[in-house]
Image (cartoon, rainbow, N blue to C red; front, side):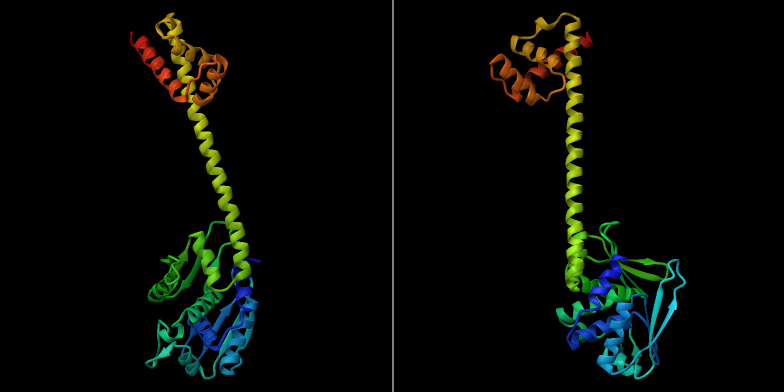
Length: 307
């Protein structure tokens, strides 16, 4: 079962107040096939079909005709078709879809005029046209598909009330509203009251974030090791250039000690080299002091190479 189906199953079982149920059904029917004479709703989710049937029956005392057929897509899932042919205009008017003697692209604002009805509307929206990727299997992605651009912009405005940062693009003859930020998708699941899905999603998200952070730290550490090894190799080459001409005597005593210990310990960092010298010679020297001596060696090696 997909993560989208899991979320739909969960939110389809939520009990709502009448105003919230109206908002939820308004979103569902607004994104279905509607005319002045009929309402036809398609879903591949059995739990969603039962929810929609119950909403229509409880709110309007109408019994939707249910037809089940095999889909034509690759998976050939069952498609549940709920059809209402009685009192259609009354239902559409009550849901804020039919007003001014026409079916409008946007619902009337009173349908979702507070946070509770807006949450219910977004819940209905997900039931009928939303999808979300399983965070365990792929990238983070939440999306909805709509038939017209005006409605897509309307939904983005509603998502942004909860700071979800929705965006949209045109896909073929439809408009896709999407959210890609992992934290925002988790917030959306909370907004529609998908509590179990939130727990699963956040567990996976936290694990992935921790794993990514560990990988970044490992990569950073490896890059630092590579950088240190490259620098140490260059330092050894500089010292060898000085030795080749018998030039160690050109270095002062402290710098010569650093050169000798760098040759003896070519794989350690400057910090480690300073600690080794301090311990073995019983003469304290800091990392900064070692670095200063290394620069003296570098300058002498450059002069030797030029000459």
